[in-house]
Length: 357
Image (cartoon, rainbow, N blue to C red; front, side, top):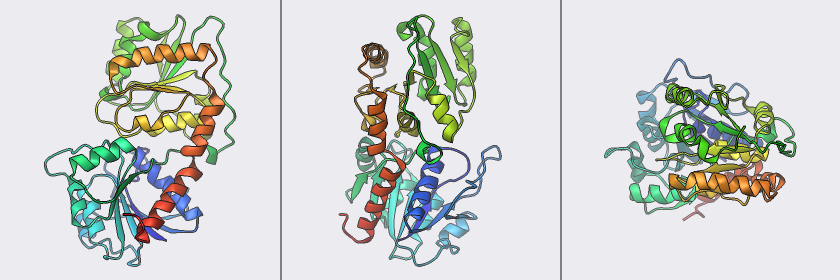
């Protein structure tokens, strides 16, 4: 297959991670892959992926998009757009008609405004993919899509590509305390402040919470910690490492917490924790319910259920009911690099062959 993937590739967000590893995996399977990205939006963002086996091009903006990206081969089988920009949608529609057009929704599926770039799906796109079943369903409703659609998860950073992921060996503290972890952006809807405000309702005495991430809510969260006298229990560490470094870090903790509220896709960091054998408790908004498994707890999306879910998870852990090897097997079977690249490859082959209706 000759494929074009379109997505913003500067930095380390979900679109960049998914697009890079999907392009990597499809190329390893013998397909010709080009990735197109708009120019850097913010000077403070990271660089383009340096270690890659696929072709990566930066387009110049509106003029390139309206020309159908002339630097791209005309002989394409399919283009997959990941993101919400006008230029990405227009550029895809300007490609030769033989190329199948697919939109991949990695947000919640909710329409952002009356005039949303994703409405251009009605002018020539062949199929929609949501990164989870709730995302797919919401997208169909919000954008009045009656055509073909399916749900396929986005690719996380796969720890198995960087090193052998060891079995997770949880260490039980003799005093009953636990080591909680928060990995993710520090923004209001992710719920870090909620954890701090409710710390005494779920954390056993002597427990700690290590916060990894940056964002607009960091100052608010730090102030909340100080006001409640929790500086010895809750600490901030900035960005977390990638690759083998993330595996080593994640396996130092007992439980990952994500009390996110509002519009959500399906956070890749939950899959990355799962790969390491680290169980989590998450508020089940957006596509998060698609990650359900016997060793983690996901609420019905009501944040009021989150604290009871954490308490229930702690009780299950103390009874020995949580099996980290089972969690790692669940990841391998459903969300590993090989599993997800295989699902995307089969889907694209089906769409190109007109077998997906």
